[in-house]
Amino acid sequence: MASSEVDQKFLGQFAKRTSSTNPYLSSFLYKVLGLSVLLSKKLVRARRLRKLDTTRDTKSLQLYHHIIWLAREGLIMVEQYIIPMVSEKLVELKVLSYHLRASFYHIFVLFHNQPSVHQTAIPSFTAKGQAVDRLSIALTPNPFEGGPVQPLPPGLAPISVPKSSAAFLLPAADYIPTATDCFVQASALADSLLGGSHPVRLSVKTEYAAYMYDCLHDGDGSRKVAQQAIKDVYNAQEGMDDDQFEDAAEMVQTLGKMMKRGMSGSVGSSTPRLGGESSTSRAGSSPSTPRASRTLKGMPKLPVVTNGVKSSRASSR
Image 1: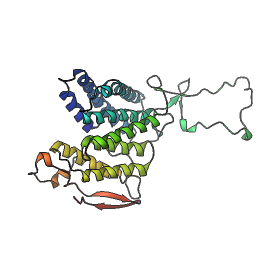
Image 2 (image 1 turned 90 degrees about the vertical axis):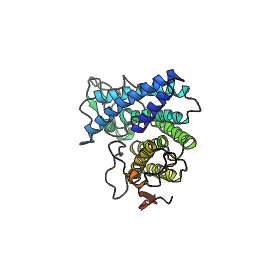
Image 3 (image 1 turned 180 degrees about the horizontal axis):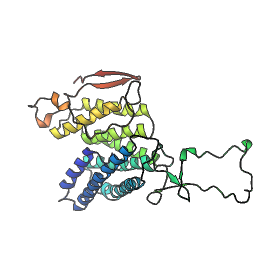
Image 4 (image 1 turned 135 degrees about the vertical axis):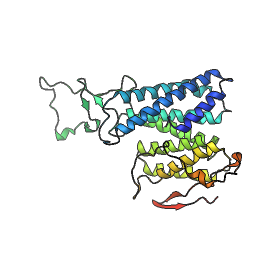
């Protein structure tokens, strides 16, 4: 997501690199970086509050409101300032900028979409402040099955449409089409501008697969995106340094877990997290490997999905 360690690392690198050539762009990159650090803590806290009981909302809506506000401000800076100022020479920053835009819309879909993609989004409220379950609101009944008598009896007020409790921050709408288009565009840019093992490209693919599974509820599409990303890593010819190798190895392991979600025998269905796990893939690489020519040949075995059947194979490279 917009709070991933890989995105934050490259944001800091480009903010420092452009400080002398384009100070205005550098200032906004630093702002988005700081916002991303704050947002990552909020997202982890929101996930922990829903961890024990995923059928209820968090105890306080202030956390959700803060997440939506941070995502809204980040989206404004990315769309209005960063993307227009990125030159064609900075291909990595260009892909990262479009990925950040898709990531902020991903947050809108998770926490503020109307209709909600799950039951743990921000609830709606009536005029009296009582929470309303959006899933319980039925459509207009069939006229042949009965219904309210017209005109309404005395004392029976019309039903008011519930408004989202965060509507003062962002209009309650269906952000899925926009988010999907942003992910498709970011994924296409990553495929055309970056190598198969580049960490920024893998970051785009990882979140795209998570978005398809969690928001679009497309398990097959999510597994295909993850599987194709891993294939592109093994088929990549470009070299990488130690830091990029470690980032790529960690994301490949996360993509391998995503390939097994929703399948028979898999444990859990939540999106794996990139942080908090130490990568063990570097143990298989030789210490004498040059930094400029290091590839992912030492990657561990990864699952392969073929017509819904899981198997494992090592890289043929």
